[in-house]
Image (cartoon, rainbow over all chains, first blue to last red; front, side):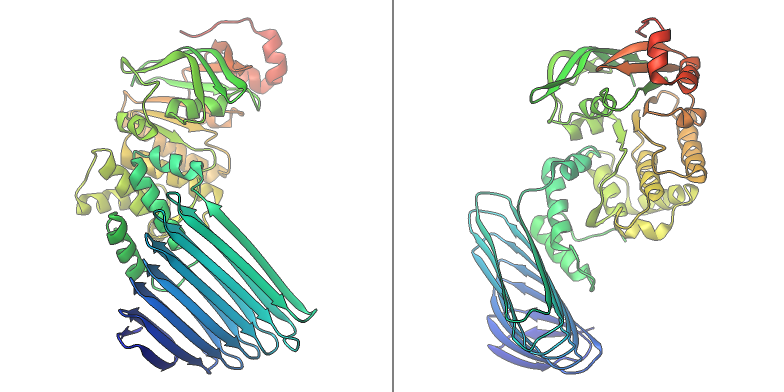
Amino acid sequence: MNKIIIDTKEFNLDLNEYLFLDVVCESIININVSNNKLNKLLIFNKNNNVKINIEMHDNSRLEINNLGINSSISYDINMYNDSNLIIIDSILTSVDSINNINIKNIGKNNNSTIYTNGINLENNKLYFNLNGIVTKDSINSVLTENSTIINMDDGDSKIIPNLIIDTKEVSANHSAFIGTFSDEELYYLMSRGINKEMAENLLLKSILLKGMNLDKDIFIKEIGEYLKIGGDTYE
Amino acid sequence: MNIEIKKLFVKTEDKEILKDFNLKINPGEVHAIMGPNGVGKSTLSKVLMGYPDYYIEKGEIIVDNKKINDLAIDERSHLGMFLVYQNPINIEGVTTSELIKASLDNGGRHKGLYEYILELEKNTEELDFDKDMLHRSFNVGFSGGERKKNEILQVLMLKPKFIILDELDSGLDVDSLKIVAEKLNQYLEENPSTSVLIITHYTRILDYIKPEFVHMMKNGTISQSGDFKLAKLIEKNGYKETFELEGNETHE
């Protein structure tokens, strides 16, 4: 995995396999995915707003794991034919965070799976606006969206899903949850002697890492430091 | 550990679950509570651990001469109480190793990292538990048997003084049950003042971890108490017939 520090206002990238983008300023990132390998993109973004434009050409495959802390992210993605996209987008925030994921299916046989996991720590906004667009000729596409926000205070949290579909041959589904932890999980950890604050922080970490398949160590360290639970996994 | 439950009445919202429940467990004793579904067995385990969903109307839970009715769940764990869950949860993104280390650190049972790793790996091996599992998300993708082994691994690492086994044998195949029971029995031999409360529908687990006292629950209270023979009587006759056959005799 190669690492690129994104410290310019605009950055263009032809993605090839596995890359880590460390975003350190507000930026627009334009990405082309044109090969048929499994391309992987790990993104870490603290304190910045970032916009990502992706062109997924025919037969392309891409998996994105993003962790944002006190930040916002917007994706505009065009999917042509036979492309496969997975986005796991996790946001941990105590400032307003407005996140948009717009996926436009232009061609046939596309598959997109989007997981958004959010932790709203204080009385701020945390929005996930999810727009899946399937054009008339984009037959046999599959769209899956699954969103979770945990409210730790009285924050304004919203999940706004829109599936705009102009064809009959499509499979699309969406699920959303906004709330707090399940008591069962919290009580289990406390029954092992872990105090309530630490137990909650472990569960927050769990939610932020939900579904992530790429190298999680970077994220574990950042989450651990931010939540003061340590980044050591004792592994 | 000395456990005394005196005249305990417990309810959730509008339903009374435990009614005038009495039980005394002396250090080193193994007790079993048996009963059909819905009599309050699992509720008892959660009340003992301090789950806030259950409201104690009357009565006392006393542990080593200290009333613990108002103690939080984690504080009860620090006293040495441990519940082996019937259906342990899974937590993605938190490894087994990390969870156990956090438990030790929080309970004032801190170990150095090197000592911790050695002990963890030794216990893992003895439980015939794949070491890779330690570094995977807690119980995610684990079989029922692996989840139970993970519970017992925590017993061995946290060294409780009072262990509640809630339907330990559910989800365990015979081979795994044998390993788990052997490790628990070895732990009890090495820590002879540890008390155990086995909660079970079936007698199978009692063939592996022998209780000195067996109690039968009915309608939120202990209806009959006896020794191991009572478990065998239940196995032979079923609960309904045993309720009818036996007189009331509560172990105090």
